[in-house]
Structures are given as C-alpha cells and as structure tokens.
Image (cartoon, rainbow, N blue to C red):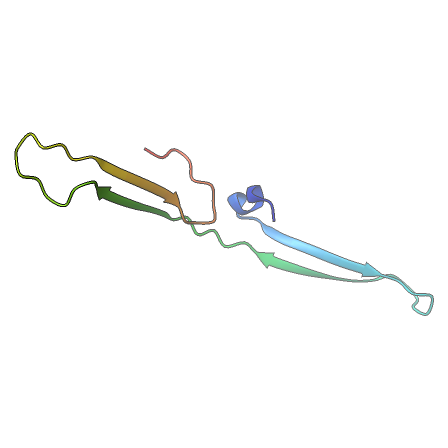
Length: 77
C-alpha cells in the first residue's frame, strides 16, 4: 500500500477476475478495505545529568520526536 493512499484516507479495492473454458462469462470478485488513519507523535526528552550542584552547571538535553502513526506528519513546530 503506497503511503500516499494512507495519507489520503481512501479505500483500497482489489478485484480478481478469471475465466475458464467451462464457464459462460468472466467471473470476478472485489474486496474493499477501508484505510484507517491513525496519526500519532511521540516525544522523549532526556538530560545528560541527573542533578546539578551549582547555578552555572550545564545541562544538555536530547529530544527525540517520532512519527509513530501511519500518516505522514506535516507542519510540525
């Protein structure tokens, strides 16, 4: 399934068609699947130290933002 189809939230249809010498006409059957969009963002923040002793002590933070959903995340600020 292409990511663009999930982003659009459309339905996905797949049709199987077959014919045999013994049947009068083409036989086919379609399956339609609804695409459920589940947008989600997770964030984790950590510091390089557990505590500080002086006002001028430096703390370095790391921030990790992850798109944990199934749609493309845009306009993240």
